[in-house]
Image 1 (cartoon, helix red, strand yellow):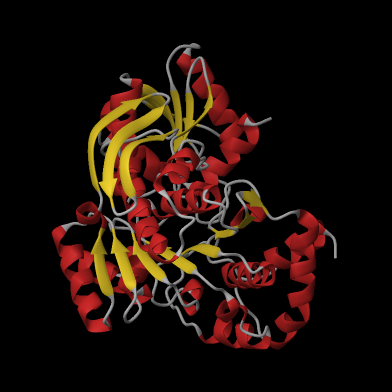
Image 2 (cartoon, one colour; image 1 turned 135 degrees about the horizontal axis):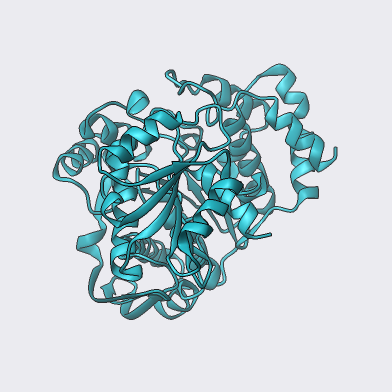
Length: 428
């Protein structure tokens, strides 16, 4: 099977990430039957770190993988959605799986699809489990797709469960209250195993604590387990002092935004727990590895003079984090290229960005779920932000460059899909 054929097969499956209407029903029956036919690869994984959350889960996954690899461990990383290519979803040693290996995996699972249909996401998760099991990786860092309790990744047996900051996203599916959303995320907790949580709203924290007691999980709060102080932020990244189970010292991240300090605190707390049974995990190699970490489409600077930043922010929490980066690092208003998906809390995501937007170029991401331009116009109009509309991301970037005049920063935000489209053009 060629790589193109493998991608076509995946694209033929139901892809809830791209459906015009959001998925409203979740069950694990299909993927559970499929994995059984595949020989239960998820049960052959030795050390799984399963990461859920509304904001920061992808960054925490990249931070963990980088640190573990820097300590000499073999790693597998499963993340979603991808930014530019599906190969990004399955990574070994910090690099995407190669096309040939990916195609062989898909070809091997093709007969199983005739017996049991699964979705696009479910198949990619199964492919990752099989790939990591075959490679016998020391650690599999796995990002939950949506929610937690009924996500395909929750069929793994995590050694450590991680829940990053919880906020309002996918409310049609997970519920409209923080209590309901936290309850779904808490579904990844396991009896007698650590459940590391990032700093949380008091309501979400209370529900997570209740679910941990109910499950019998050991609740570990990262902001209590790992202290952070003396944070310095600049266009080249962030530097801060840290004290935790792993050690103490200065940590540098080549990432923008103080929110990454919280993500790093969570990752360091997890690493401190893993170090109890793995002498390779030490503070010094962890710090060295984190200084080289790269997290795609998370406040990523892809061009200079003027700065062009691509961010996947698509909910109120990530919108606020991006606004903080603009205010602290760029310190001036920007030309904002913005596009979002239907069903997202667009107004609340735009609100913190509006004061930092000189002009917004509104565009629909290449997705059946793309929010209509009148909806975007209404959101920015409420905050009296000047805006124009574009026919596509290439046109939007052209407009943005003209509005920038070669001096004003350009920021692309609102959707993973828009970020991917922008990265494909800007990398060319």
